[in-house]
Length: 137
Image (cartoon, rainbow, N blue to C red; front, side, top):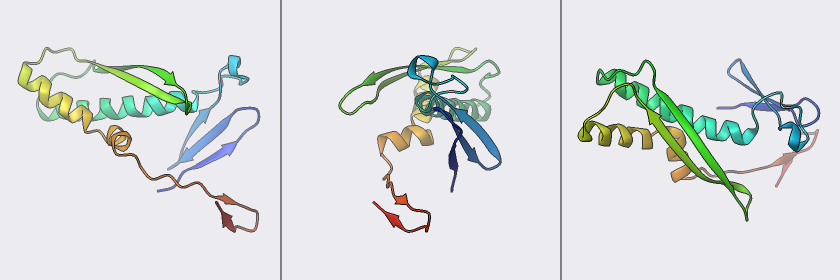
């Protein structure tokens, strides 16, 4: 799988993947134009959307009402290194679940692909290529 991020001036970068484009930018306070979500917002949003997707699929399979399903995220930053330190997700369903259903639904939520990619971190390699296409690290 491949996606491409392209510089568009200032602090704006566009992410293109599978025919879709997402604009990222920094808030005005951080020198940006606030033309899109920041990369950190997208990171937390990706996790949140993945959990919502997995929960929604679970609800559909088990005939649990999920038309007004929402998942909210709060996060804090940490230092050394600078990163997202904590993320708290809250799943809101229009229906009350019994304890057994709650446990299964939360297990499914924890199993979402993005969450698992945080729990078992992906190997990240960063290479620099010059115009001739040769790489170096």
